Amino acid sequence: MRKFVFAAAIVSLAACGSKEEAPPAPAETDYTGIGDTATGDMTGTYEVKNADGSVVIETINADGTYVDATPDGAETERGTWRQDGANMCFDPAGDAPEACFAGGAPGPDGSFEIRDAQGNVASTVRKIEADAGNAMAPAQ
Image (cartoon, rainbow, N blue to C red; front, side):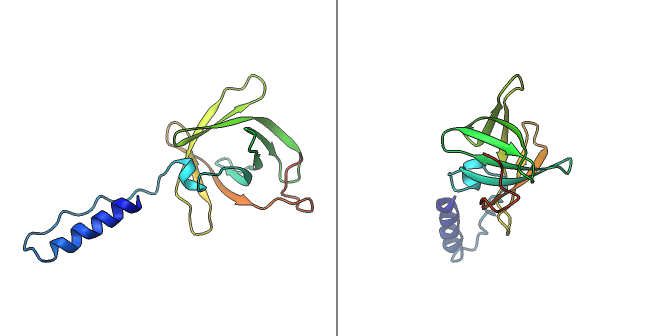
């Protein structure tokens, strides 16, 4: 994306000496792939505020597993995760089907929206620091 912005800037500067007006640069979208959202390393602990108002603390592990918990630490779900292009897919243990999501660009506070396959906002996510004394940290 930076190469595109740089190239657009050069084209705009070159157009300054011309009487013809340069076409406007395409608008940048705030919707990106999950890997772009968290600098490519998705491991860590996240506060997930779902569209229904519920809050889940999700820990994404480097070994391809994840654990969801309530804010007070009670485990609610676990399973495996994988990155599929711009999407992050979660496959819960048991019979529940895998679900894939795409992420939006981070806001000023680092939080970003997650959208389902239909493009609906499913949750707002922000990375948090988990420690043993923090009630927000999920049980392991």
